[in-house]
Image: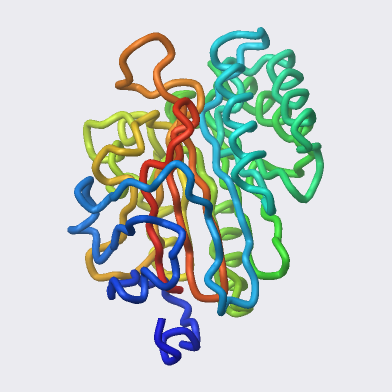
Amino acid sequence: MSRQAAHRKPSTRIRAIAPIAILAALCALFASIAIWQSAASSNVSDYQPIPSTATIAAAPDDDYSIQLEFLSDIHLSGSDDEYSAHLETALDDIDEQAHDSSVLCIAGDGIDSAKQVQYDQLKSILTHHGYTTPSSNLFVAIGNHECWGGQDETYAALRAAYMQNWGYDNVYHNMKVDDKIDLIALGSDQSPAWWTHASFSSTELAWLERTLAADEQSGLLSIVVCHHPVAGTVNGSEAGQYGSESGIDNSADLLAVLQKHDNVVFVSGHTHLDLTDEGAIFRAADGTGPLYVRDGAVAYLREATGEGGASQGLYMTITSQTITIAARDFTDSVWLWKRVFFR
């Protein structure tokens, strides 16, 4: 990296790294780097493989490095089965790969059918790996399976069970990480059209707007963790696809809030799509608004073949200058791709 590039003052807009020379200097431990330039170029050909022996490291000129991991769609049943084994494998991988982990983020559907025994199982496995509740190293968003079959009064009771188990005051909440990042969880705070959907009240959306504005004013990176994707962003969220048809009822209202802010990463789950599929990262063609990122799934991938299929998740490293996102296959213990973005 040139001295000019290395000491560039970060802006509030996340920008893709274009010059290969800069990427090589920043990511010397990786064999190859994929470059994100625009929404139009976000396709599978841009994702380059990473050696399985690689590690995620900060650039030497950065003054801090915060490491996050993202898991979604764990679907624990309350019994020791294939899905609980997948979670153990994923957490073992994180123990091995992320020695300096700051926070483990779960993007919803940690449990399968809203039973207390499933919460107990999930908390027990997490505790075994050092993630307790409440704590500063665990951040859990609600998914639709935490509200299995719920409508109206039943839905309210299921939301309350989520809050009680994880120690939150609401289904939407936030947590600051080292005064550099604001983790923001969104959750369906009103009954959606069907329990597989999500719906955000005007109160929640107003809270989100205030939170994002305050983060922007303070220079914090906002990372929104929401189980459902915003319609029309990452793959699986287009009209007719599962992430849209069983998605956010008032997605346009959420999008209107998000698109006002550039210094935002929006991470979702729900679709169970393979992270090697086209379109796992999206940004508006004009380069404005959040960077939308789709997580994989721990329990199973929707189109995987064979019993159980693959189990995938994301590693993210935040520095003063860059955001590094790496996709991991926990089943085979291999990196799938890595993308680096200038802040």
